[in-house]
Image 1 (cartoon, rainbow, N blue to C red):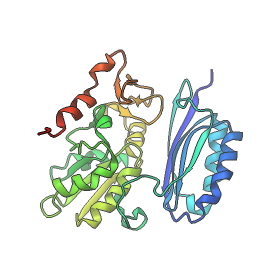
Image 2 (cartoon, helix red, strand yellow; image 1 turned 135 degrees about the horizontal axis):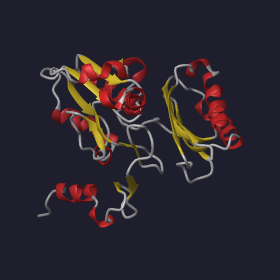
Image 3 (cartoon, one colour; image 1 turned 120 degrees about the vertical axis):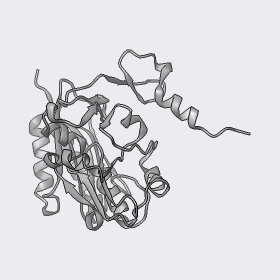
Image 4 (cartoon, helix red, strand yellow; image 1 turned 90 degrees about the horizontal axis):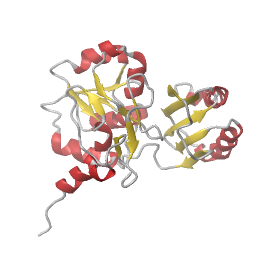
Length: 276
């Protein structure tokens, strides 16, 4: 049986006509037998689609035919079955393609410096660099880069507050940030630059590109990587990992583990302030 091709994509750019693209992309994806989600906003495009190789290629060729999207960032992976249950691509219009909730943040003009996977290991092992995992608690639980700080957020919109409460641009001027595919850390670097951090770096293509490019024996990655589809996680080979969704709460859990023993739910309950 042919494998399902999966493409995670995003690009920040001035997308004034994003609303007009919605019906065009919906028709294209339906005809190409693709599944997944695409988010369109004035700041760009973000999403993950899965299906036949020819359908993926047709979508990417269509997007890149627009000169504004020649820099589209794409990560590929594969699965034996389509990781999306809904038999269509949901093309949605949004205020932001990744929601931080801070007005005026513009990665197109303020983002930090890209670091490709080949140079990432040297950067994050520099003792002067603060390494930050921009993802949420239910993601970092599955895996992270060695020595990375975990903001322990439940939602990306909590990240700016965590930065304000835990980091200091005077004493921690050099930071390296990463996330799943690159989009959250790209927006986060724009926030960090605005906050006065002098040297701000982010992993180009995110964890997925790093795993795709880096031999396991040279890797600084530990564990698996959470993904936002029915695979739940992928291992270092980008094959489906050892986690499933907990049907009681929607968080990831090791396959076969009792759903009542969710570590994320337990942690969040423990962290709640006492009611007096």
